[in-house]
Image (cartoon, rainbow, N blue to C red; front, top):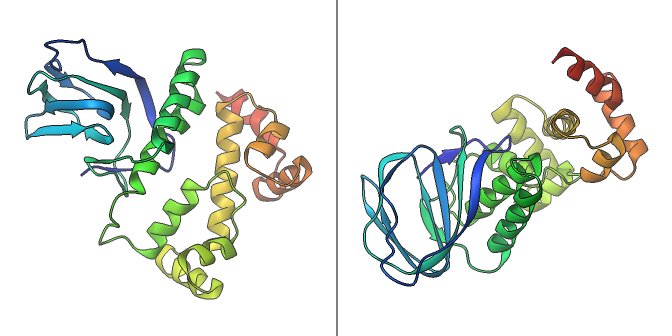
Amino acid sequence: MPYFNLNAPVELLFCGEFISPEHDWKHLTRNLLEYELMLVTEGTLLIGDSAQEYTVPAGEYLLMSPDEFQHGTQVCKCRFFWLHFRCPAGETLIPTQGTFGGVEVPEIMERLLRTERTAPACLLSRYLASELLLTLNCSAPPAAHATLSERIKEFVFRNRFSDLKVSDIARTFGYHEKYISAAFRREEGVALKSYLIRRRLGEAERLLLETDYTPTEISYFLNFSSPHTFFRFFKTHAGETAGEFRSRRKTRT
């Protein structure tokens, strides 16, 4: 099962929806150069790689890793969403095959396709692709080796657009604030509150550099209580205003 580094948005290459012809369709044989995620919504997909064969019925997904022999194993009739992406290895587990019951995953995929139609390969598309993977990760059994701090970091990433507090994390994981803060510092060498600030600042900096959103728009995107609160937060922790940061970094490039 692949593990991904989802601390930054994945590199989305292309995506779409496929409906097989009425008769005699079998997935093509090819060298798969990147990861491919397929979400089957109708029928059954019959596909394989150099290691094994897969049967993927409606309501299930398949995540295929790069392989020299991706191929259809039998004729089949099906409908599925698909996307190709690249992402470095990391700590977030996505099972190779699983279910995506409910409407959340298809809705994310529909939003991704709508976004791609108007702004291909934009930052929002990359975030939506990452959200899709994280949603599938939530259905995975917890990794036996996952530490408390690793689970906290994953939770923080999933909620990176929220104004998270240490108290929110303590309540979610069922620990006292002092205990969870001490445990995080012991495992990561940094205070949990400082980590939250650093991640929130990092998202703000990413949006300033990778989008044309104004600082005011970014303040709403990151769910600050007001633009003024965001401006003060950024100046305090970055040592310069959001506008100065954007101008200085873009001038260098």
